[in-house]
Length: 374
Image 1 (cartoon, rainbow, N blue to C red):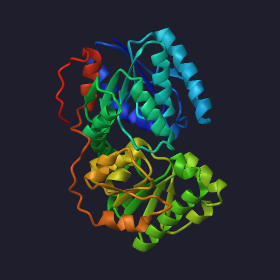
Image 2: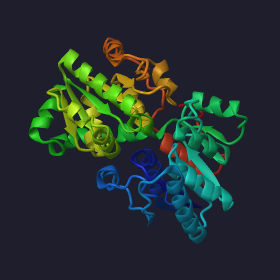
Image 3: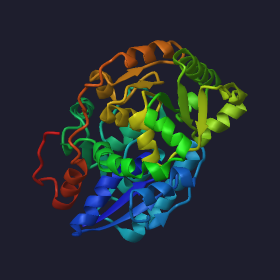
Image 4: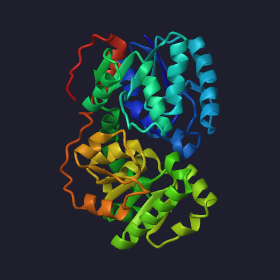
């Protein structure tokens, strides 16, 4: 069995790592990785392969940043060229990025089966490019690996009835596998003064990167004002690892100096282990990231999601997360609600064996024995 894996972003590297490890372990396959380099800086890319001890991609396309059309087009061209050369039996894609869609489209057009990891997620907000990518990828995939019952039902409502596998979310595998390694290494990961802050656990953690927030001045301004208000009201340090896109837009919109506040500490983009530790010890996380919503829920850290909608409704249902539409909601009120909640919610994303389930189905076929309980 020859398997191609297409990835291009930090979350894809993390979430596909449990599958890659199992493919390495099982050995009865020939797999290779195509990296589109959708995330192209070292801090958002190569450091994750090193930390997770993953093999280097066989192919790096060097696509980088561009408009959706240009970026996806360059990916399609590069992926197609590799697939014609390699002729895999199945191509695995994950999530909802332009790399995901390009990998699925290129494979489908060449008659190669597509396996979509994290199939069935829906925000039902078609203004999000990610939502378009998810829907299109699901409808041309041959293997749909749904992480939760909600995701499986989303697929069925759209008329997809066959080849859906309820496997859990590989983010659980990755989080559980790596949090203890990160704990053991935290003394070397953090400088002494920052390690004291982290160990104290008396801080909020913020991540902002989605275009719907960064590319809209008023929304980004509202987020900045909300973060400042939260930091000042609770008199807490707010750690803010800054995504390159967010930094660029803060400066473009003349909002950069607003963040020069005693409560705000701007950090460089964090490596995976470092970020896991930052998440684990935080009193609360404010984010617009889908993966961070999941990790916060798994680690039992209260989360406030700064978006109109989420494709992870399970985090809301179990009580680990709350949504705030910047244009309508009050961030401070949402933070107050989450800080008062008990951290006793259940993890809705599975038992940490998703990578094994997926690898076995890919290698042994659709009739591979599978516990349909996560």
